[in-house]
Each structure stands twice: as C-alpha cells, then as structure tokens.
Image (cartoon, rainbow, N blue to C red; front, top):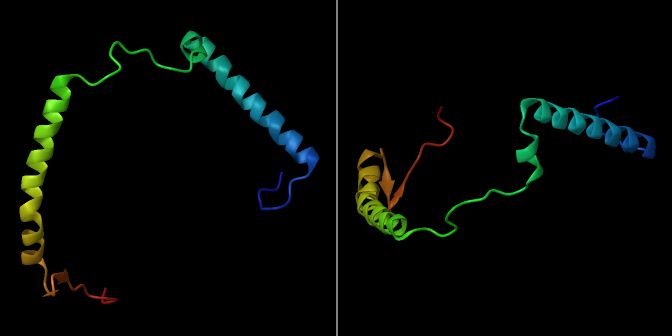
Length: 97
C-alpha cells in the first residue's frame, strides 16, 4: 500500500476497514487473555460520590487565594530580571541568536 496522499478508491476503503477490524479484534482478544474483558464491556466508571465534597471546595478556595498572592509579585520580578523594559512591556531581542 502506498502511504503518499491520494484519493482512496472503494476497494482501498474496504481493505482499510478490514485491516482496522482485524486490529480491533486482535486487541479485544488480547484484553480477554489478560482478563480485562469484563471491564471493557462497560463504557463508564462507577463512583461512590458524584459531587465534590465540602472539604475539597474549601481547600480549592484556599489554593486560589494563595495563588493570587504569589502572582502579585510575579510581574515585578519579571521586570526586574528583564534586560530592557519599555512602557510596561519587556523588550526582547529579535533574531540575535
């Protein structure tokens, strides 16, 4: 089979479908041999809790507050480390590497 781009004929489409089906069948057989077939039949995951608990949301709020405090000093630090700053922007070298 040629892997360069070309229009795919009906015969090639059928061949591709058959190859894809053979690959999927081999994969399913490998899952069955590994003892995973019963898990693969279901397409979803069962969970005990479907909603976030209060502890999780409280922790998330605290993390967001901390992140805001850290980001306030970030801009100043970046400007201190920059070689050249003009009108609140870092001026970078262009094509000098």
